[in-house]
Amino acid sequence: MPIEELTVGDPPAESPALPLVESVNDRLQTHRIFLPGLLESALDTLTEASTGVVWIRDLFLPHSPQSRILIYDYEKRALLRPGSGIVDPLLSLATTFLGELVAERAWAGAFNRPIIFLCHGFGGLLLKRALALSHSRRGKSTERLRSVYVSTYAILFVGTPHQGMPKSALRFARDPNVAGLSQFMISLLIGSEMLNEVADQFMPIMKQYRVFNFWEELESEIDDTTAYVVDRDSAAPHWADTEQCGIRATHLGMMKFGTARASGYTVMREALTRYIKSAPTTIETRWFNEKKFLDAEHRRQAEELLKHTLEFGSKMNKDAEHSLEYYLVSHRSSVQFTGRKQQAQELKENLDRLLDSPSQKTRGEHKIVVIYGLGGSGKTQFCLRYAEENRIK
Image (cartoon, rainbow, N blue to C red; front, side):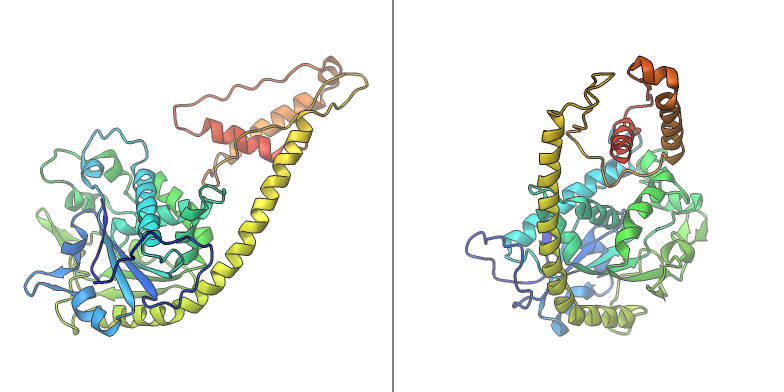
């Protein structure tokens, strides 16, 4: 779904150029981008029903005219519907969001402008996956997508289930028009493989951001009982060097501030103001360093490609075996691939034992290992990672 703007601004007369480094001290100094949860649209999440106040526009914006406010809605029905055919819906949503955000910022001539994200519920998980994806884009043709990772300064997670939700809360989040829970909803349970994967991808890059976690202090009505949709332990884990605060509201009411005195608004306003003030200088320095990093990365890739080309045509071990040894792997393993350490160690030990065997050395036969598993279980990535880690064998 398209990104919408809550701030009135003048669109550029034509599509701007996309320099790698540009000044961030322009008329609109920061982007504040809001991602909602699964249960409401972005605008409904931010609107206090009795007054119609959209707090980020009506209460905060008059005191921060140098910012653009963007809201993003995504397709939720496929996530809530049982039997969805999408293998990895979170990655699909993150890819679409990242592409649309980069295009929006480029068209506005704000490719390198600092970003402050505000996320409610599942929107926080979507952002974490999108930032990890952005961080992994280092190739010449996709480095534009890396701009979001570089430009992000701060993230405010509001009721995000970092560590999952209890079974009782899934009843609150399910689609009332659909019988049963979708596989995606089940993957939001505490300790799920999907949540662990998202955490593994996000934690290495989190130290570069200012992070503020908010949790709900009032229980929500779920069927015939009340409970927290996302409890404090899940919404505000004990991460080092992060800020935390509770909001005296239910899960759906955490971002519905009708007045400047509403619970949670003062803390959120102060954090946003502080981040907006600090972001430009930090992001400008980060972009300066990013240019040097990408230049070095491009040189390394070129040297590696040249080396592979030379190795492909070189003859080795001319004496007894008259064999050729090559390392020409056309793909690199994904930086998002993780795990399978036990299987990788078993494979290494078994192949090393075969290679070191005197009978195998003299016979010079190829060594074959069969890797099997379900489709999408990571067989290709497993083999690529093994080849990279053992290329000098």
